[in-house]
Image (tube, rainbow, N blue to C red; front, side, top):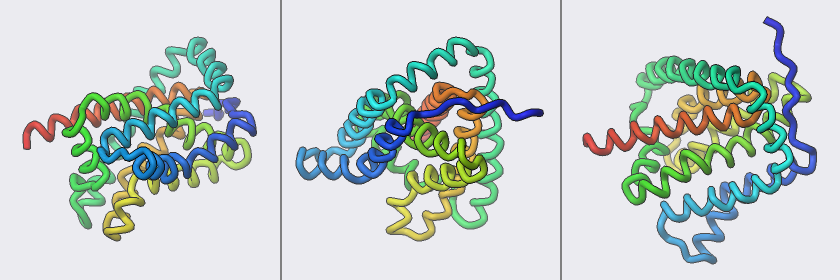
Length: 231
């Protein structure tokens, strides 16, 4: 099947401003909120980091996101089926990756998931808002729009490789620095990282990957909460 033309693109200035926010989001802002703002609760720190990032990126990418919303309104059915198809593919890929990982580590002991469970226990409301609404906007603007979208117009394969690697690293690097075995959990994020890029590319609309990301986080959060209640 012929590849659909990919027209979604942040302006060079918006892409640069988004990329400048990436180290601020990962290290700078949490440090400022904790050291200068005196915020010690991890749930509040996580919520504020994503909330401030979402406001910043919505302002930076307002024109882009408004244009993307027009695409969403023009092709709601196609984008909906892309989201559903990518989610189904992710479930199958996750099972395959889980089987592979089980030969080396326990897939259920992903340190990032354990940290999320602790945050859910501390404040389900804030964690839900951050995971379901704020994180998809922040992470899709950073990883898909700014990184994948910019590279996609230069080299499609490079765009996939770089974005998948950075997205996976983003979720495990803080734990893997203390426990080298945690690097193996990078594999658990490859299916989602690949399919988020694929969804964005196929929809030619960032709201497609945002919707897919929201769905994924919503279901994952419900499963984590259910697991916590059963334990």
